[in-house]
Length: 416
Image (cartoon, rainbow, N blue to C red; front, side):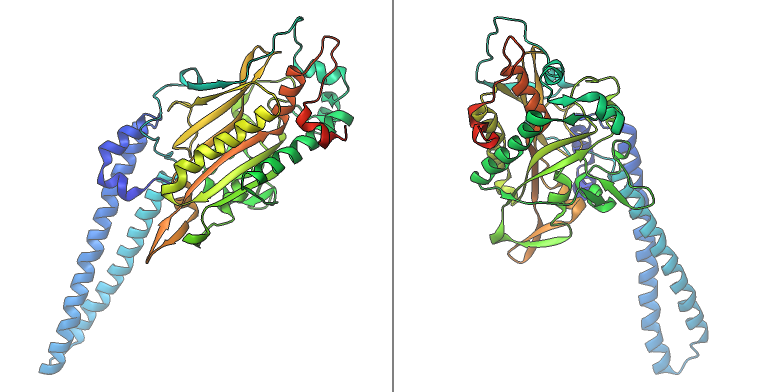
């Protein structure tokens, strides 16, 4: 959640920054109205409380002078009821304000480029040169079926569309990639953590998936529990409502999970293959850190994800997301896009985001800074999306006959 005190103090300035991200001006006007309503509710309460304090002093005077206090007591009792009612109004107005604030995204960093969508993202650099083929490269779904690595029809039979089954070398490659990524991240100082794949509503609110993205989540019927859309949710919320010792920061974590998304907003996109599945595997990086260290760690996380692709000999590029393509909770994001020769384009394989104190405020994650408790900064990113890495390997390492080489870095993990 954004800092409401900051928004109230500089409403016009912060609103301009939020509108760079496409926030509806009407929503901001509603928030402004709630600020005024809450201010009036607080003033009404304070006025009643001041009257109560004044009457309490009168009690002492009445007693010293031996006056009848029955009329004064009646006024005090009546005022107490008004104070209780005023407190309830104040609580309701505060709750209404916070509910509106939950729908407001994070403020983009000043250096995030303006833009409407992914077409306006800014390339930072390219890494490795795409291979030149002497034949027309096939797309991954054709290669997967030809080699017997992935069965799309049986995935649909077991569940529905956008599910698949990996076989033999496909399943082994999937497992090899997970182990390779986790080991690489560990060498970079990220502690491996195994977390639940089911979380409660509070956890999803903490990282910003709820309430905005409820339609994309799989909810467990009859319970306040959801399948995770990303390991970012449980990893970040490990520290929900905690005050962390400053000397223990940063907490740098990596974890593998399956992820579950309805992809409600992606109808008609990537309907073939495993680019966009309802269930997919991902290795995640998450960091909890002091504010002054978050930019350095952000660069470390981007470098780690890029280095994994380089070790796998996969050409890729880094792009800074523009304001129109920036995620709800992100203040700044760098996407890593891998080259897919079958599609003749770069496709996203990792998104590294610095959310600043946005998630920490929602999840109440703080650290002890001297005598004060201060909000941490949280960062997250894929290193990497396993299915998309498999896609990239299939398309970049294919031979003319449709067979597929395995990158040298993975040979020990494949028993080769």
